Length: 474
Image (cartoon, rainbow, N blue to C red; front, side, top):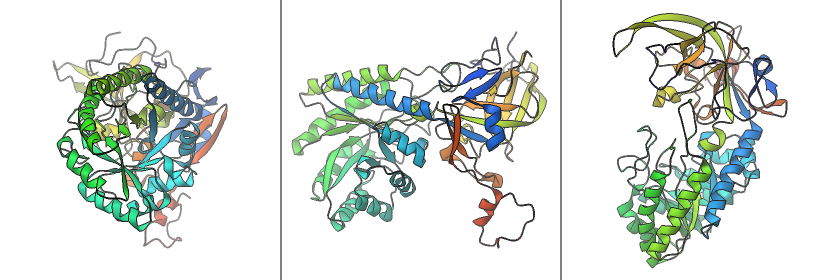
């Protein structure tokens, strides 16, 4: 079958539009009698019990991915004579259950706000195992973090040095800190996801690190752990990490003249596959190459190899999640292709969610995949664009995908790899309640975050007296 001229060049017509592309789905996802099951639970059963849209998290997959990433990094650095410290980047998806899974897997947790701190503490995570990021932590957030005994605060500006020192003195603690710097290495990713170039809000210039560290060391209430750098997100290879590490180690060596520098934090950003053409390097390969580079760099500089910390999030929770939608309408639109003007049909498949439960396509132009979840079909593949229900033309869930041509209202649709930055970026745009998140494992399903009802949304409106509005969904 010839490709639709409206399809992007990378999207190939599948031999079977029902087939589940390896690497996009959690490893428990299979088709059983034509229907997608995850964690041993049928998609139709999940939709009937919890409704759609629905975030589905494969608990076993999340825990196994956490262990695999942890083991890969720790093994690689043990082989070069040092240790790796692994933090789960909570911003990807953080709930009490998820925090407990990560802690049980032996990971520390990265937080970025007072709210994320509250979740980690509610999960019973030892505060010593937390790292606190953010370019504009409030005085109250800093004070609370210090008071509970947080393991590390990542200093993001010169003003924060004094603020953290004052909080540490007030609580009679010596607070461990890292200094976030920009290595100047640009990750091969969307501009909004690249976070180590100079013209952005995070960190300080690498050339200013020595003065900032001297200022940190001037405070008896602060303990300097080392430099921190995060080069971006959704990174498929090791080159950016290798170059960033080399630049950081040169400064790390100079800082040793003024005192101990026990750690080096290279951040996170390991990518995952969202489409059939995405090809991220295996975490074991990335870990070995980064470890060998750090060890070789330290040997060349004649300095001890520090403990190296990482902050993966997406690579742990991303493929553990999928989102279920129900198709509401379909619409064929005749469109002229941009390259040669040839006209072809693009089918719009509208679902009951959209940018309120997955903002990434609107924010970054992120690509996703989709499959019919409740059945299989022998119909020929047709190019579709999966659209949300919001009052925005840019409300697209999947920009381009081939689905069976008989996709119709009432069909269940599954979008894989939505475990990271979907629930955490969700909104109430158009007054839609955020969907529930459920965990599946070994044939069981349970709610880990309740969905919002109309009554929940109205309860926040100061003018709502709790009685007006017949038919409010509660």
